[in-house]
Image 1: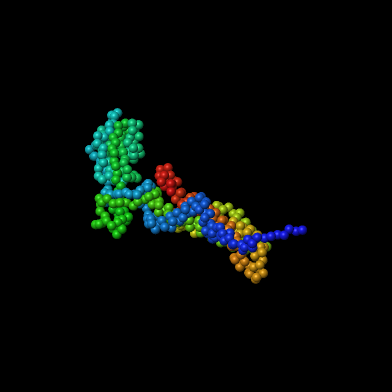
Image 2: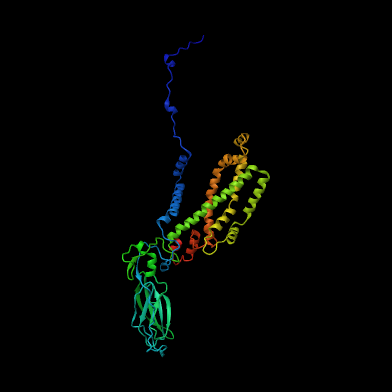
Length: 441
């Protein structure tokens, strides 16, 4: 006999709805919000993004903040190190130097084995500046000439006098003017009397040169409307020179301004050339992968032919054939060459993706609905390959920048005076040992 099942009244109470079970445990995020969260978790990618943003700001906004002309030459400040605040004395036109020759003294005396001594007097006359240093000395008995040296350190016991400036022939010649690459620093001038041989006795003087600028150059650099100098510029006035935070190059051009404009050229080529090459590659690869058959065969044979060409050799040949003349930048020829030779990789990649997707169900459904071939390519196939295409373009951008820099470095890229990072490296490496700041950029 079956046992009777007795149910309690509580078993018939309505079930309560637990709202917490139906709450969303994670808020809904858009694609870009989720990508931003993932980016912030990747420290290396986040730092790279900050560097890219800084480079773009430096390139696009920098020339508006630092308005110095990158092609302006200041020949008085050649290969100068970084400077932020520097003054100079305005000088007038330098008068003609008249050498001092004493006609009463013999020009080539006979020393008869007389040991030559150092001149008793050796000093400067006139105004010494970075334009000119004029030296004068007293006669040495038996001397047939004098040797002039210039050094940046005080001579030691080993007679390290520095750079030989000149050998004055004639014992009655008692003056000399130095205009060779003078800078705002301290020099030690040494004079040695000579006859058949140089004397072991020498006399040295110390000369500290102030920074100077000619009146004509000061008027060009500091117009009264911009300088705000009351009464205009005058000889003997002290003015503040332009700052060069990264120094100047071998032609006296500001390196910071050239670095900004050179970045514009390099980044323009780095972004624009891959963009145009990508359009060509996507178009040819899309047609080849979708239609197949003879179209695919001949388009891929053309791509194989272009891909087989020696890249660097044909880049140089394009540069020669389409090369820029004197005073032209050479950017146009470089862009055309890079676009013509750089589309094959993305074309083959796009073709491979479309060969996989063209037989998919959504493509067949679109065909049944009457969609045309180019509509299917543009609306369905290419958007589904966009991820792979973007990654390929991302790798092509630094490759294009490097190619431009390399060609400019070997003299086949952007033509001076238009600055680019590659041509600036080529200029700086020639003076790296003597002026390290030109290479540190």
